Length: 45
Image (cartoon, rainbow, N blue to C red; front, side):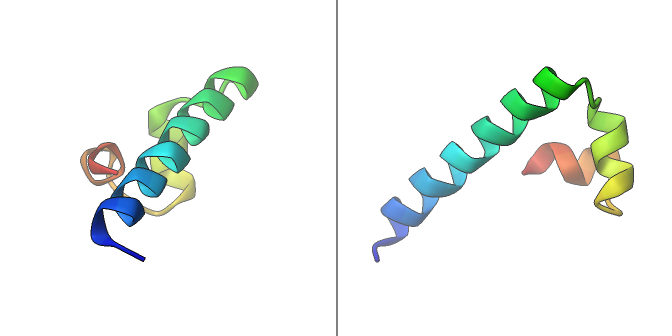
């Protein structure tokens, strides 16, 4: 699997997570806490 393909897949997953967060009403702050990351670290993903 090429690096470009992996990068594209990760971007698609990140988009789906954002969409699902919006649907169920979980904020970036809540997700950062749930994933044990700072808000800044979470936003980098």
